[in-house]
Amino acid sequence: MVFCRPFLVGAGNLPDNEIRSASNAISKAWGGDLSEASCLDDPRHVFQSLSKAKGLVRLLGDAAMQNSFGGSWIEALGAWRQPTILIVTPTSSGDLPGSAYAYTALCKSLCVPLIGIIQAGGNWKPTQRRLDGLPWCGWLKSEFSNFSESFDYGRSEKMEVDDIVVRLRRRILALNPKNIS
Image 1: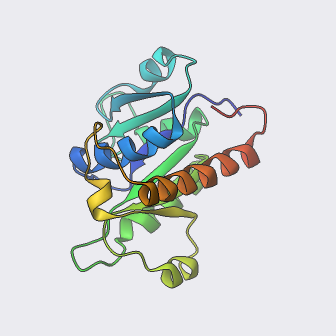
Image 2: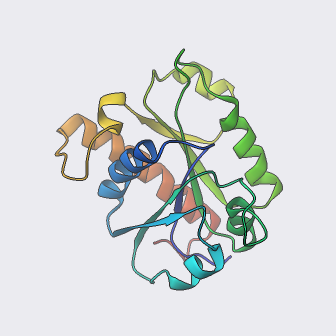
């Protein structure tokens, strides 16, 4: 498995500000650089241009959308075996959108190394999350997932995000113990 840097991908076409807020929170705890790419960019050029530096890559846009380069980003993530973390936002009613299930199935069918899923905002329903069979890594509270890069979060929020990052790193190690970034 060729590892580059883990990609933070919205499950569906999340607004850029939502994916940015959630990825800023995760990246701050992860450490290293946070690069950004667009689903309109050719993935081959993005993969080749990424440095060997540690950190994460935030992908803006709908990764399943077919594009001018002849495929979709989700297909490229599978073909290049890039570790992927999905970010899901609940519906206005607080329910989990079907895109969480659809993107998980799409990752599986396209051999995308899906590390896990993070819920950004809404209410966390741990019993339902355990029953739905998806690879959850945790939840970012609404007020916490909507912060800027300069936001200085408190001790309890830091512990929650640190727990998510620990789960993500363990899952990456389970895929390939030689290549954690």
